[in-house]
Image (cartoon, rainbow, N blue to C red; front, side, top):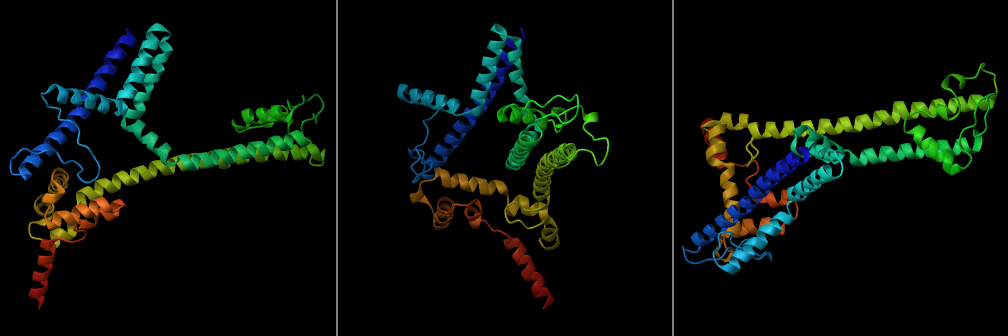
Length: 348
C-alpha cells in the first residue's frame, strides 16, 4: 500500500511539473509566433526564434495536421526526456515498485525528496557544492596524515612495547594502513596499540620508544580532532554564511536599488520627482526590458531598427554576462539627469 501511494504521488508531481514545463515552452513559442505575425503586418509568418544563430523553432503545439501533430508529440517527448524531474520521478517510481515486490527498504530512496523540494535541503546541497573543493582538499590532507602515521607505525611501533600488551595488527603494510584508516577516521589511533589508560608511561625517564609512541598518538589526536575536524566545520559554516549573505544581498538590492540602472532608493527619492516607486514602476520598469528582449527574439533580424540591431549585436556577440548588459543604462537615468540639471540651474 505504501508503494502504491508513493507511485501515485510520484506520478502526480511528475505530471504536474512536466505539464508546467511543456506549457511554459508552448506558451513562449505561441507568443513568439504572435509577435512574428504582428511584426510582419498580420500576414502569414513563421517563428524566427533565434534567427541567425542556427536554432530551429520547435513545432507548433496547437497544430492540426497529422505531420504537425507527429512533430508536436516528438517535441513533447523531447521535452520530457530532457527534463530532470521526469528522470528523478522515474527513479522514485522504480524504487516504489522495488519496495512493493522486493523489499520495503527501497523506499529509503524517497528521502532524496528532502534535498530537491525543501528549502533547507536545497540550502544544504548548495553549501556542500560551494565548499566541495575545500572539503576534498581537507579530506586529502587527512588521508595523507593517516598514511604517514601508518608508515611510522609499521616501521617503528608494530611490536608490543609493554608487557602483556598485544601487538598491533601490522603484519603487512596493507593491513597496517587499513587499520589506521579505520581508527584514524574516528580521530583516535591509541586503541591500535593498547588500552588508552596503559598508553601513558609510568615515569618521564621511561623507555624512550614508549615515550615516542605516546607523543605520536597524542599528536595525531590533536591534528585530527582540533585541526582537521574544525577545518571541516569552518568550511561548511563559511559556505552557509556566504549563502545567507547572498540571499540578504539579493533581498536588499531588490528593495533598495533599481534593477535596471542600479541607482539606490535614497538617491532617487532625494532628486527625482515621484520618488523611487515611480522610477521603478514607470521609467525603469523591469518587465518592459524583459518584453523588449522578447521582442528581439520574436522579430526577424531584417526588421530590426538601428537601436534594436545594436542591442542584438551586444547580446549575441559578447561572451560574459557583464558585457552582454552593456546596453543597459547602468547608473544613468534621464529623469535623474534632468533633475540634477534643474538643481544645478537653480543654484546658479
